Length: 331
Ligand SMILES: Nc1ncnc2c1ncn2[C@@H]1O[C@H](COP(=O)(O)OP(=O)(O)OP(=O)(O)O)[C@@H](O)[C@H]1O
Image (tube, rainbow, N blue to C red; front, side, top):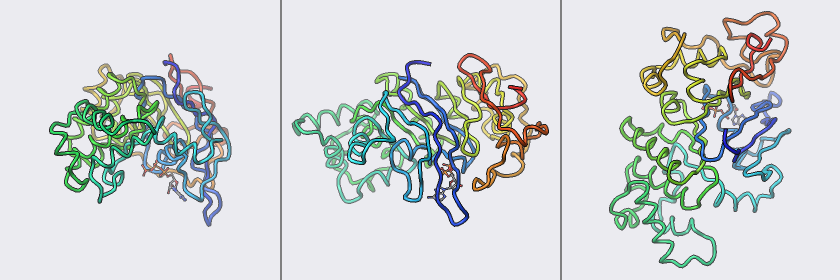
């Protein structure tokens, strides 16, 4: 891995609920290297959105950080006061979300909003506009004058997502968080946005954290993959390793249960020993007000042995830059 831009270690986050604390992130460790695209995959409810909110300093009011560290370019974010965190969200950290419409004010033109994003003092108006036009060119938006005069509701979903990516890049972020950026788009637009993200990284060197349910997209876009299950990282490694030789039983089941096998196979050749005829993963994500004592996946794991239910598994190296947390791999 290249030098890390984002380093998260031992992160614990809980939500206060009527049933007691919901332990949504339990000791999350992850790194995003400079200029790398890192994917996060996992079933709904595994804590992806909570993780992003923790990075951005946007956790819900009933959330509490109970330990750990989130460092961006070496700077601890968990200690930053809100004004500094807000400044960082307009500068070093950028988010492109599933619903670009929510990122814009519907009653202001795109031009006005992208000009306002560049709020740092001292940039002349003409230069701001020139930067926007330049960024539009980079993300493939032609006819910038027309787009700048438009209101968000006048643009299609795919076009608005391009504008959102251009807006994010205007701040020259150290880290771009793309949270399911293609979920609301059709397949053709999805392919265009994925190409754009890769091109953005290639041209600007921006590090990208890409969250998606779509394993084929992750296989085609990312350099590294982090597999989350019930608030923990169960496996992390280079994309080819994760998809060709997944080591954790959860990763294997997740890939086998994914309908997009062709997309994964096209992106990652040489897959060995992965059955594609398995049904969806039986059972459900455990109740995190009372997490299992041992391996969090043990209640659903077809390979679990007695000690898997009583002892948390250590996370250990299973290959170069490839780790997995499973008793059967790390006895
Ligand atoms: N403010 C909150 N208060 C209580 N529980 C919450 C809150 N926000 C999320 N949760 C719960 O925390 C767990 C993790 O949610 P989170 O949204 O982080 O998962 P996710 O992996 O992003 O899921 P999805 O892919 O569906 O967005 C879920 O059980 C969710 O219901």
